[in-house]
Image 1 (cartoon, rainbow, N blue to C red):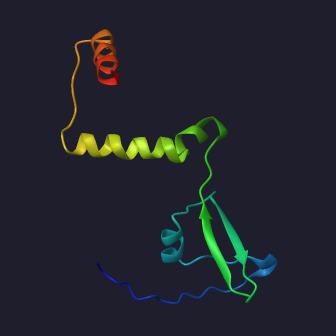
Image 2 (image 1 turned 90 degrees about the vertical axis):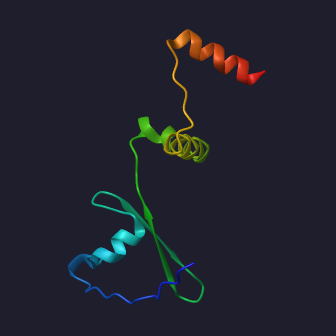
Image 3 (image 1 turned 45 degrees about the horizontal axis):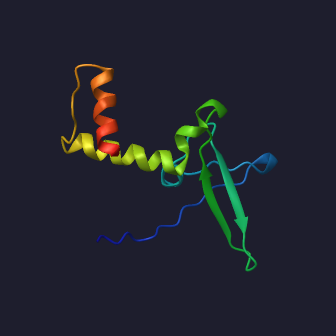
Length: 101
């Protein structure tokens, strides 16, 4: 397991409380233009910053944790060649029903 040394980054406060995040910070937060960030201020005064990528309401289902778990499983199966081809939809559904039994 590799251990990464924490590095401090600075930014300058501009008018209207605007701060430009250093590129490395934005990448670590996995955010890009249009995404939101969330701040938590602890009792000791420390600020925790989290990236909040938004998705259109019609696509929110895709980001559900259970759906994402299935996406990761499917990607792993594809990457390792654990796939099966069918002649048509009917034979695919037959195989799924057989697997469910």
